[in-house]
Length: 201
Ligand SMILES: [Zn+2]
Image 1 (cartoon, helix red, strand yellow):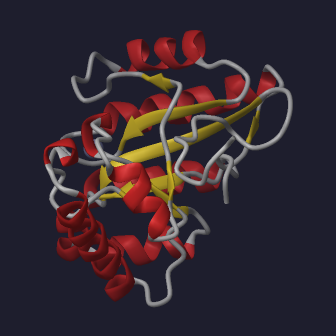
Image 2 (cartoon, rainbow, N blue to C red):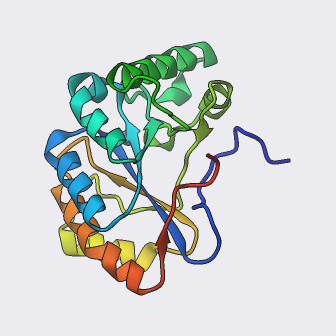
């Protein structure tokens, strides 16, 4: 039986759909430029927010929400949650959601993504807090930036119909990711892809 705690890795809709998701922000240098790129291409995405970064840059979180993107909890301190008890995980996730809602009162936070994909007991805890665990089918390993052309190639070769794609706008210099996204969106559209949010909300 499908459960609310099942990890989602599919884009909503049928056929050639894809969901872009961005982790570890907000990060003013790259997040604000990414917002410009997404607006220019009329694409909505999911931003998986790191609570400590939310507290540092609440204004950027407001910009993300105001642009119509979807917010996801990505934990408070980006710890390995698989090492924590359910009570500790709950405290962390509640702290991160509270930080997001201090930046954006009444923000909708329909998803949670575990740092490092180390889920442990976090899917059940997230579900009990009203958030769907958000996984991915394609990660382009942009945390070690290999060059814009290589990231674009990984995206174009790796995207399959229905994929949730994991990328990063925070946690380091993500300018190559932003440039690759800018290049790749028109190509995917020309191949017939539509950009949707992940299933489950
Ligand atoms: Zn992360």
